[in-house]
View (cartoon, rainbow, N blue to C red):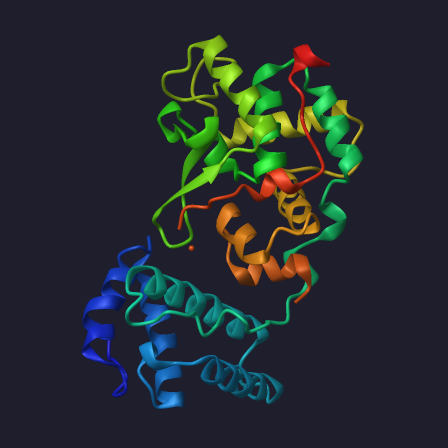
Length: 302
């Protein structure tokens, strides 16, 4: 890949290859490098020297290109998503080279097709869903993890006993993978902690937490079927998916005044995604899910 004449050797030959190694597809890494070369050429600066003013100037330039029909709105979004990922990686791994993400405060125009508010279940629907699943202890726990912590379908079905660790003061956390590819400790809210620990103890969990009816590890397809099944039993008319339940968890944390930065880190999403909810990295010390005025009680306490 040909680098910009403004790129430093440190960035092009050391930092960027380390970032590229976190990408599953070489094509994605190559596209991100091309975008980095473009902004460096535009600003006549090394990527490590870019400021928020540079980011804003380049964004405005791209908007002009869009207005002239030369690029699409999607292209702008893809480039800035890449810039954000790259800058977060540098800030986390090379803080002496970049302390603040210059792209973090760029507010991209986001269309509703990416976040459909009408698909996000209401709190009443969540309550109805939990009630419908209360006699299925595995499904009840799964719903708790998704609706309270915002776990993805993949994180849920792959959850293993070894990922659950103890913290101070009796708290527990789940080891997940953050946006930068590094391990992230995601604290478990207090109400879900009790349900999770009880489930593991009762079922003697040593490896995978969740299984299908054939005693095999649960798959995303199995989970999708179960969500549809219990949504129907709960009388939820709109089609409900894991993603919709996860979006409810994220929205609830933000509505409870958890900071966008904290929610982004906790849920493993970028600030660009968080801004779709609000219209505008490191181990987390506090659990933003605990700020929500919503608690799930164990079945035997009902």
